[in-house]
Length: 429
Image 1 (cartoon, rainbow, N blue to C red):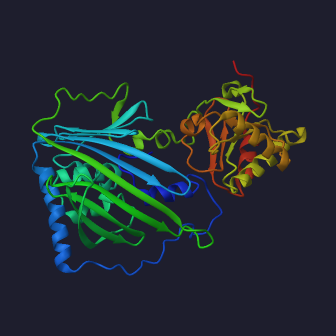
Image 2 (image 1 turned 45 degrees about the vertical axis):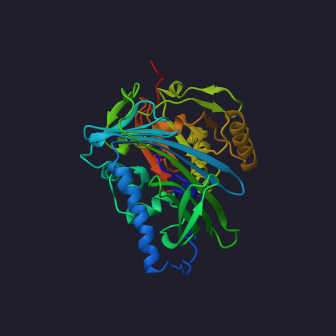
């Protein structure tokens, strides 16, 4: 899930790791560079720069109402991404911040967070007088409120200097101050900054008392065997100080219902299954592309093993599933269970290529247990799966009897004992 403000460092770490997968990896997947010696500005220059930043915060806070549009462009050697965030701040703590992914609405001391990809729920919590504190309480990071909200609440520049740089430099310090002019001849105070990952600047218009943009050039050592990850961030913001906001700004959550916590909001964490829960149904395909309906297994014991090709450790769980499946084929073992390996969490977005990849993997590995493939992320969401391998034994009534997250060498024996104790499966009525 993304939030209204981009945290470049955190999002990059998330994108380079296989999130949600159990992995055979060491602790040093992401190596930060040694912090270089940062040349800070002399005290007089620093004081002058801080004064300009405080003037920006004072003007933003004291305006009757503010309308802002912030555009962030991140450029790497491989990609260019642009995000636009539109904000409105009115009297009595009213706030509305909208991005392509979300809406934050604050009025009458209540904050509401809508994430567009979650169609059925949104967060609604009382926050008092501070949106920044409210965001920290709900999300755990006050920076996710955005530097605009921090300006509106009159926070000291030390609280939002890192945020106005979109966290691209780590913890920045003021390293200089320059006087420039735009092409149209308007004055610009350029506040130079430096941090552990690079350098940049913040542009301030003294005639408007507004921050109008920031720039950063970042370099991070992801792995000593790889080239550094390099990113250029450019932020521009258009700010209007106005007497009043447009009337009739309506909050409409659609069909969503309010919840109070992130856990209750997230469709994965709130659907996480436990022993004794009813096993959910979801759309699956076999490796030949035929739709498979899990409801057709009712009346029989079912053993599912969830796996993904990007987490090698999940193969160990499938090997255990394969072993149980082969034993179930031997009448001498006197066990009755339907076994299926379910491929999830693949990075391939389209169903057909994902299915063909799973089929090829199965053939090359010499596996014989029937293989199924999820469509979209229906299974991931319905089951609340965050880690693979995930193995689950379901009874004839559709209730989860046992489950194993990760690899446990004792799991196959545990399942076989449960199946030997079970009554013979009867046809579903």
